[in-house]
Structures are given as C-alpha cells and as structure tokens.
Amino acid sequence: MHDFDGMVGQIYDAAVEPGRWRQVLETLSDFLEGAATKLTFQNARTLHSEANSVRMPPEADLSYAQYYYKTNVFLPRIARLSAGTLIPIWDLLPREVYQRSEFYNDFCRPGDMCHSIGVVLANEPDVRVVFTCGRADATGEFGPEHLDRLRRIGPHLVRAAGVGLRLSRAEIVRSANVEALHRIAQGVLIVAANCEILFANRAAEALLTQADGIRIEKSSLHATSPAHAVQLRRLIATAADRSEAAGGDIALTRPAPRRPLSVLVAPLKIELTWFVPGRPAAIVFVADPDSAPHTLQGQLRDLYRLTPAEAAVATAVARGEGLQAVADEVGISLTTVRTHLQHVFEKTETRRQAELVRLIAASGFYERH
Image (cartoon, rainbow, N blue to C red; front, side):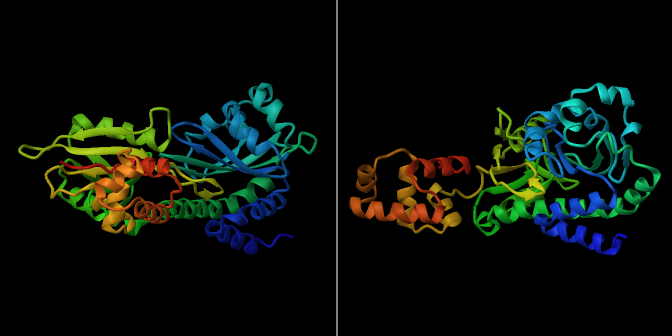
C-alpha cells in the first residue's frame, strides 16, 4: 500500500530542495514496481544530455553524459512531445528497432532498463526533462495498471519540474550578484540560450524602454535592426551553450545621429544544480557611446566597491603594467601598491594578477575615450 499523498508531498519538497530527488526516484520506482529510475535532461540546442538515476550501475550517469546519450534512439522522438505526455516506449518506435540498437544492448540491458514507461516533464526552447522508470528483461513489461499509476503521479511531476526550472532561473540571477550589476553604468543583461531575459540592470532597462538599438519582445531580447537580429541571437546561443565560437561582439545601429550600441556577449560561468548542472545562460554588456562617459575605474568602483586608489591600481594592472610602473603612475610606494592590490583581490574574489585581468576582460569593461 503506497502513501500517495505523502509521495506527492515529497515531489513538491524536492522541487525546492533538489537534494531530495534521489529519494523521490526510489519511492517512484517502488510505486511503479520498476527497477532503474531516472531523470534525463537534454539541452534542446546542442542535444547534449545527462541523467540522474537510482538503481542503475554507479557509472551509468557519467557514461550516459559522456557517450550513450548520442545513441538514445528515443530522444529525437521525445523532442516532438509536449510536457505531460506519457511514454509507453512502443508508442515511440518499433520494438525490433529498439532491441537492435546500441543503446538497448550496451546501456539499457546492463542497467535493467529493457522495458520502460515515462512522462515528459518539460519541453522548452532550451531544455527537455523526461522521467523514466525501467524494468529488467526477465521481469517483463509494465502493465496497464502501471500506466494508470504513472498517469496519476505524472501531473505532479510536471508541475514540480516547472517549479524547479523557474527556481533555476532565479538562482542564475541571484548568483550573478544582482545589486553589483545594478551599480554598473553600462547595460547588463542575463539571458537564456533562447534570448529570454532573466535579468536586466537599470541601465539595460532604460535602453529596453527606449527600444533604441535593443528591445524586448515577449520577454526576449532582440536587436531593433532586423539586419542584426539574427546575428545577436546567434551570439547569445553560442555563448550560453559555451560552444567553440562562444559569444562575441556586435555594433547595433540606431537612427542618426545616434552612434551604434557596442554589445559584448559572453558565457555566464555559474554552475547551478536542479537535478544536474543548471541551464545555460549568457551575459550581455551594452555600452551607449552617446551617454555620459564612464571610466573603467568608475565601473570597477561601482561594481566591487573599490576605493579610488584601488580602482587606479586595478586599472593599471589590467593594462599589463608591472607593480613598480603602477606605483610610479599612481604616485604611491611599491608597498602601498601591493596593499591596494591585495584589497582588490579580496573584493573581486581573485587571487592573482592574471585572474584579475581575465575578470576585467570577461566582464566587458573598457575605457571610453
């Protein structure tokens, strides 16, 4: 006898406390009278997939993420299904096709996933999530009563997945130090791979309101110039997915006499967890050359609460100058330079000059002339 209400409560607890999901998967395996039970996550753009499983060999999740997701004959078919769709596997492809596949023989059979049922939990522009419960070949196929049980619990899993994905968006923004980003004079946006805006600082909000070079449409970031819209979307997608050609820069034209906006798109290097590492995102820096000028030192002071002297030292170090040259330029002793630099390391959470230089470069800071 299963405590259905208690199981539903566990599912919603796990939606906000991801560490609980493994216990939930164990409970669901018992409820469905299955063996191996897993959640599969697919990047809808790169098709890279990962899984979090119970009652499978210890190396299964790693080997799936490194190789076997490429052989999963179900994923291309699942991509066409909407959230909430139940998946008896023989509805997706013929039994003989599955049983001849490398995925079945080298991954599913050793992992007691010969017979499976499941449900699509999410199918969004950037991510797909699927729940699957399997059985060994010797145990036999799931029956109608098991599908009925899955049909009862499926809607709760779908809603929990929706909560988890929304929380992952919020976690991206929280981890990016929102208050610090608001202090930057140039526009800063955090966007998903599909250009959905997860965060915009005050400067970026002003530009979006003006629809001057960039604009917002259905919660997504767009270039106002059709000629640049496709290019901007491509830069964001490559940055979010951290492809070999990740991100880049683009000048977004505006009506004369205003000069183009200078835009830099880069990967947002924050590791998150909702079952598995979180959703891809990119950070977009937008500089308006016609706005009041802001120096690199001023931006560093605003973002990291550096003193004027610390910002001057950081700026000189970012240009590649040696510490003695920095001391001569700023007009302070070498010992004082080292003291200021140590404070800069502490406030920027860096440890070496090379890390500081990379941080400033990756943040899109530059001197305006």
